[in-house]
Image (tube, rainbow, N blue to C red; front, side, top):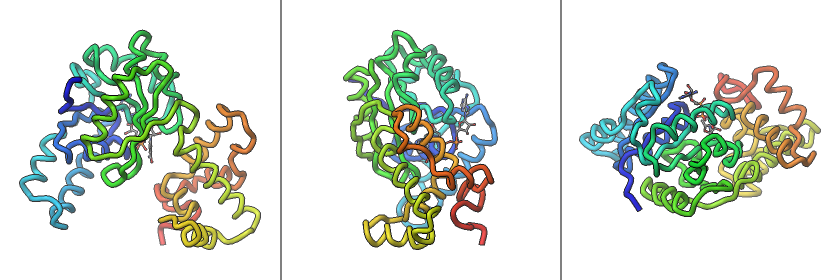
Length: 286
Ligand code: NAD
């Protein structure tokens, strides 16, 4: 098994930039690739600020912060993935986009490279169908936001994923200080299959007037020992993301219990998407 000390991350958004920071914190080199130049600038800014905060709080020495930041490179072209042993795709959640990226990644990466996707809801087997004979090297590597803090990595095996690909993915997750846990390729894997219906049900409870949103959240916090109530969590994740994942669960698993709550749909239609737009269930601008 070849040791990985450098990885490529495709997509420099919330997740890609977090994965790059976690990798560099663990001593790995990371090349972050994004077609959208401002996303690269934003990622670089986030990395600088996060490292500076760690120095301020005494968690990181100034010299180590410099070293960490020096291990991250920012590139616009997918050609920068040439010769990589391990690529993690964290681009936008669109199936055609991901399939196209994997086709191109398979051409530039080393012939035995692991090609991982951070998708929340798209089938690993479907993404792997775009790379033909290379499907054994495609795997789900599902990180959680914020990546530098969250320990879990759900490792999802597609139909053709080889044992060696699983082992190398688990090894990389451990190198990054994460806890990898295996799951199979069914819609939503485990995390979203269980979490999203819970969030959806909280919207139903609110819509039916069972309790006020802040009371639903407080009840779940105190009653279930959740660090955050489900409606507050929905604002953090993004109401549009929650809605889209429910639609995938509904389509793929075919059970009406996965249909998004009408109130959730309505808030999305109104542009109330949560923290990112300043208003969702709660008003964050105040
Ligand atoms: P995001 O919108 O913050 O970032 C996506 C980035 O992909 C953007 O910067 C965009 O410019 C870039 N991109 C689009 N097309 C590209 C291409 N052809 N080549 C390179 N880059 C391209 O999204 P995100 O929240 O970081 O999510 C990324 C992935 O991670 C999605 O698959 C999502 O489902 C998954 N995910 C998200 C979360 C979360 O909480 N946000 C958690 C787990 C998994």
